[in-house]
Image (spheres, rainbow, N blue to C red):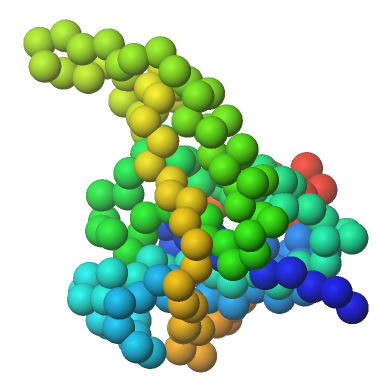
Length: 185
C-alpha cells in the first residue's frame, strides 16, 4: 500500500496523536519531536527548551483514502493558528513536510490562513481589543509555521498513545463532538 507522511505540531502532542490516530485513512500517528537541534532529544530536554524542537506527531496516511487538505482542515479545527502558545516554543504550531509536491498544497493553505482575517487589530490605549485567542477573529497574525522537515524523533514509549493509557487526563479537544461530526472513529 502506498503511504505518505506529514508532520503536525500544535499544543499537546498527546491530543494530536489521539485525534489523528482515529481518522479514516490515517495508518499511524506517532508522538515525537520535530526539527530538533539535538540528536535523539528527550522529553525533559524538549520541555526545557534545550533542543529547539516542537512537540508534534508523524502521520502516515493513505492518500487514496484521505488527502492532505483534509488533514490540514482537521489540524486547524483542533488548534488555533492565530494564537501563540505562551507555554513555550516546544508547543508552537506548524506543518512540516518532506515531499516537495506537498509544499504547494501547504503554502496555498497557509496563505488562506494568513489572509482569512486580514483586518488589522483595533487598539485603544495600547490595549488590543481583538485578542487572537478570543472568538473575535479580526486579527490576521497567523503563528503556525510551514517549513520542511529536518528531522523527527519518536517520543519515549510512555508518551505514545498517552491518552488511551490515561483516559482521565484532562484535554481541551472535544472528542465527543469530533465523533458526532464523523471526523474520528
